[in-house]
Length: 352
Ligand code: DCP
Ligand code: MG
Ligand code: MG
Image (cartoon, rainbow, N blue to C red; front, side, top):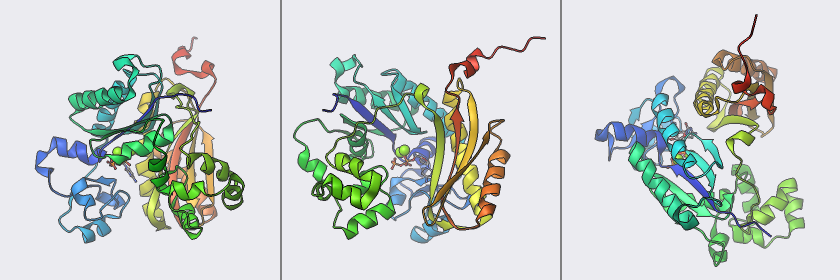
């Protein structure tokens, strides 16, 4: 039986673009893309631009083809970091069980939160309000009894949305969700599912656990549960976190070294921004992850010395040169020391 949890998934709306709109209201109602520059790729776009098919990770030239009037704004990470810090401060006013997924997104376990008579929906509403008061930005919340359904719910009323999926009477709604909402079902798995006639959670439900295992290997049992809206994963607090990484899947496979380095800079920049909330942890290693166009993946790791971008570039160069083949994803991360003795707070100045 599933434990009775109350989970909120919170995600800011068109985050980088909304911050830029807030600081330059002239951009409102214009199609805006955040990006340009030497990397030549968009971080995100506002909702006006999305109507033209302009979206995150899209090469800038393609975005301009789709929307010639697109206003390009260079990203300003400091601003996104500042907004993110305020957002997470609000989360922590409601619970310690906060699991950050990116600068603009987190899971909160509010099972024990006593505010609003423990109504998770009202808690989510107050979180939205507080974030708006302190940052001038809107976000969307999904409320449910596990991570999977909370995350799907937060997308249902975006932007500025709030959607609650309670534990009873939602079997038909769950059946209607597309399989691509399941974490781990990417383009490749979705295609395979489609060839088996599986498009929705309901379609998945018609397969036995054994059949799903036959088709999808070790992912099968999870698919069996997820398609029924069952998810036992816990909200991992920041202290339990063993590593932190940022990955970027490209719009198209890339083999150009310069462009790949550009993407590496981008993920390391975001990773560094996210690490600001983990200053009390000691880093053990840094690593770079590469996924090839054939979906084989590899990571290269070395003991932590610093977060200098050159260290990441060096790791990337070494591994990429072993097999110069097109990539579909690049990632950068750090692993933390789990042993409390390594906690930075306990490192005393050296004597003598
Ligand atoms: N981001 C990025 N590169 C990507 C995806 C995202 O740099 N490939 C950055 C820019 C986004 C931010 O991360 O503003 C948050 O990502 P989301 O996926 O939450 O997208 P948005 O917040 O922009 O839009 P949405 O309203 O769909 O959440
Ligand atoms: Mg977002
Ligand atoms: Mg997000």
